[in-house]
Length: 210
Image 1 (cartoon, rainbow, N blue to C red):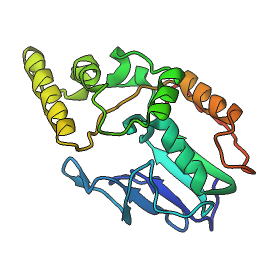
Image 2 (cartoon, rainbow, N blue to C red):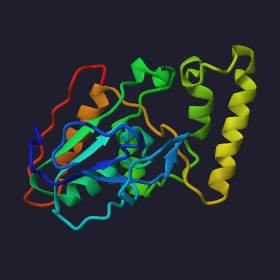
Image 3 (cartoon, rainbow, N blue to C red):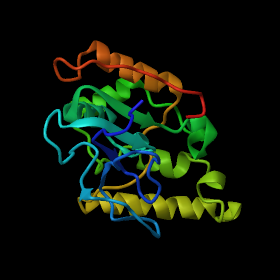
Image 4 (tube, rainbow, N blue to C red):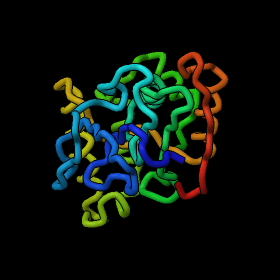
């Protein structure tokens, strides 16, 4: 889909960028490391505030990023902003049913639109308790013994709330996705003409496991 010789960016690649691109993308990340693994980044920036001019890029790649964004619509609008007409957003979003989010409710399109209207940021505490107490801890952190999960949940949630209280960003899965709400979100935005004037929008949603 992208082809050789294109200039683009990959957001949040961490230590595992999408392979096979020539030339390599410009890597952007808002964290210097993820756990013990250093992140690959040419520039530090946020998914909703990219360091590029309007219509500057042929593509934007975001693999396993959208669920970490508190304001997915703002991110998509920003990605469209930096794309040239006919550019590609290569988006990989994990299906909640195949991971630790399977015990959480599916995020509605209406909720994501409300986050956009409210200007929600990564300092939002709305989903902290839902995430901390709602994920399947057997998959999220298998090293935690089942009897220790309640204590771990409380400690984890308290730490996130303290981070927000200090005015700092948090890194959780703010929202949950399946192919159905990814498709519905993109189609809703396309109907609403959220992309900059003159740009075409194409939606391709892959198998139910991605």
